[in-house]
Length: 364
Image 1 (cartoon, rainbow, N blue to C red):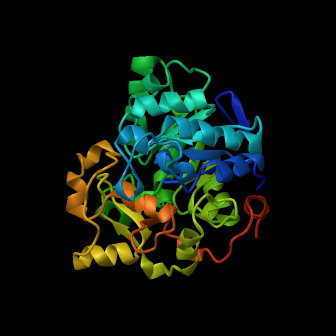
Image 2: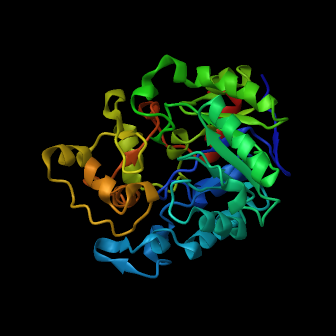
């Protein structure tokens, strides 16, 4: 089966592959810029931009180099710089920004991303019912929500149509094998009915009720054969995150990449998260220290996501999501939280984005 180009809103990507937005700092200018350069859709994560370039763009830093409050953990100035650098790599090729719905100041971050030059906004970590309102001043920017059920898509389309007479420009259908935060409760992640191959067809059918919008399958997609499998199930393309961590251009630290290269299947677990959704990553020293009661004290310096309730949920699960993801980006093995999809243990080499895209399009 030939992999065809796809039109999303007014834009066209030559290869039907979206690189998943990975924060903190895993998909910034180098990774996203190179994926777009190679014909896929590069996605810049807006999460934690305050630590970009050794915190050069955060206006206020507290002890241990933590950006203070939401306006510094997320830095508008840094996001603009990240987009500027990515554009130098990919030129006019389409470039997207991932903005978590759970972020504090969601609307402000969406507007900033549009002003910074995002051609598309991708949002998950909650059902983004107000996404069109956040982007209302930028009608040329394509909106791509992430859903996990046909019911969620139906509710979202009804709301968007009623409030803004608008529908999604594309849909990402994410199954429970993805890295990071999931769209299902913990127990639901293991149900047969929630596997990507089972939730995809009903969502494809629901989308047809609303016209024509491309569907991208995500969560556990690893290679060319997987891409073909989901295209045959009705998807128009795929989104892949973890596989892109294994590239030379990925913005993650060498330590982060080595954690994945060394990971065994049994080391990859679902964990409780302060965000309120289960999250998948590699079980490392952080989780051992939580179990032993020796994990770093929760201080909530950055106030990164609304569901955490100013660190209260972080205290329940035993770690601060902002601090732990930042430490992983900075290569701190003892305190870092290393997100990965369920297939992360399959990562065995670090190659270029160009080499990976060739493998995905043409087969291993």
